Amino acid sequence: MAGRRGEMAYRFYRVLTYSISPLIRLHLRCCKFCGREHPFRWRERLGCPSAARPAGRLLWFHAVSLGEGVTAIPIIKRCLETSSDVNVLMTTTSSLAFEVLKFRLPSSVIYQLAPLDIASSIDRFLKYWRPDAILLMESEIWPNLIMGASRNGIALALLNARVSENSFKNWCHPLTFSFNTQGIRFQLLQAPVSAIHYCGDLKFEEICSQLMHRKVWMASSLHQVFLEAHNVLKHKYADLVTIIVPRQPHNGRDIALKLEKQGISFAHRSRVDEITHGTSIYMVGSLGELRELYGLTPTAVIGGSFTPGTAGHNILEAAAAGCAIITGHHVGHFSHVISKMRQVNPLSVLQVKN
Image (cartoon, rainbow, N blue to C red; front, side):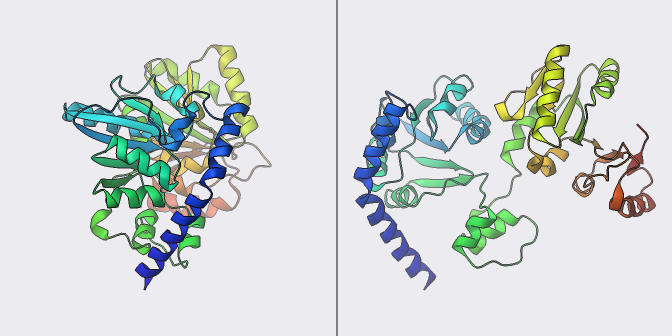
């Protein structure tokens, strides 16, 4: 019954996208004149190619934007290293993403803007490029593309796959989840267990490799600048990298200005900067990634606990990642948690003044 409903829903989607395709073409032309689409490459969004298809096997990598595109780069490089006869086609939805990616992608990679998920564009794109496999990044689940790949016998994979809680609720009835929520959600949406493989978050694999031989510590949920501590540690450890996660965006801007004034080299995650040999500070603007970032560092300083009137911030994510935690004494209702942790392991949390 579920399969029947899914088939009917897809038929409705295909008819709908086909019927509104003239309006979509008109919208694309308007976007071109308004500067929101590439002035010369906008036809690629309709599946019209602007490059020749090379002979031999072709892997098509698709990412919606810059962040997902950067995540795909190590996989693309690995594919080219292991198979000399493989060609790679890369697409993104945003032309702005390509302006950054073109300097990081191997020179042999072909780049195109991604076709819109309307029947005519997808059919035209697949007929011309004839990919041997399609690798979609994260949540790029497009019905016409997926069904088109199935009809043409093209292998398809969703890398770093994720379904947001809101999307899942729209597609299925809510259930209680356990470990590896993303994989469970895909199973509940009828994906076979044999097709799901958990290998960690690919977004952080490249960062992990860049930090592999560096001394790393993190200062998170900051309300003030920890540059004094960074400078002291940097003097002792020349290869130090400090990961700074401000509590509020304006704190991040203030820290960035102070770093620039002091001439301290830093990379910013929002700009998808690489952590190079000369990088000593890595700025992260989103608290939403703390859980994964804690896995990159053995030590975490949790802010909001060093001055009177503050009540500390959540230390549980850092503890779950195995970090040694440093906080102040103003931890509010987390004092009970800290007491329990220190009973089990006295070195798990260190409370310091100033």
